[in-house]
Image (cartoon, rainbow, N blue to C red; front, top):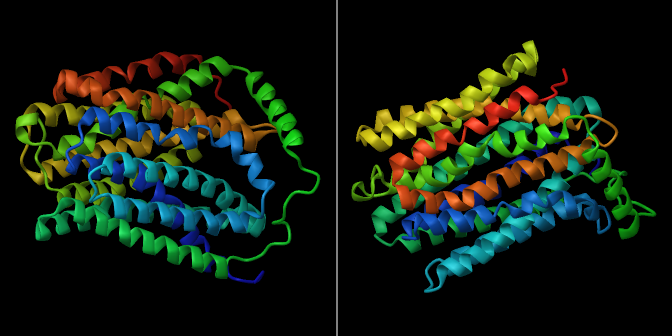
Length: 415
């Protein structure tokens, strides 16, 4: 079992890490829009689903206290599959919104816990040189999960909507497929994952020692130089994107009378799941090459502009209401490319800021602030859109890009 090739489990492990996140954050928005939930309710309640990733650093140390990381991996995949089955069963019911949200919460917490265990297991199971080699494989299969969730599954839902004429039934089938897939992944990983000797419950670790260590981590984090500007940057760099991401799919799906583009579900799946994901991946790769060559200090401003200015394409579409699907795909591709390119600066800053004796824990805290920066503004985005309409909402999104520009000059950027 210890000699299994990493190729037998790393691709499936990171595919399983990416798909639940996409289901919770993206597929849920599209499904609720098709089931006639208001934009304000969609944005408010699905933004709350970020909470497990916000508070993930608080319970990640306790994963070491119970069982092994290997056990957590396949147990959380099985629990995620149960949540997906729960959604499949409750979508056709009268109180589907409340019931499916409860199961999305279950998926969110199990997925966040799976992230902790999977990343820890990856580091325990591979030597340093193999960890570096397989980092690209990890990212690739995470992106394939995005393509599957945002693209293929949404397109399948659209096809079923059209052929059956029953929207709840179509989404129920999609989540039954996901439930079966994750049950299979759990069984596969229970069998195929290696058993590294270091993957054991940490001896001598108690809740008291964890709390004491966590206290030291928080204190050392708060004493970092430039902490004020860094926290403001973490919370504002994606302020516009945090609101755009909640309303972009509803905008494409909404009827013309409501100011939307009236696309079909399958068209939205193709637009975001293929054009969008490929553009995002290309932007991320180019951003990584740029940072590796010249460093963050040189690229922080171009990347901040790249993550902000392309949002103008949504303002254009809200005003022009184009019907040409090629124009719509091009606009989404431009925005996603800019987001992928600009987001690399954010990731690099978190890594540089976290550097030090507690870098793993500090990075986890930074990602918690990153999730908070997406959750809090996203909760209000639907209400703002319903009060103002799509054109003024996308203008508001552009204005929300300005705070990050005011913070950047005060950042302490290491190289």
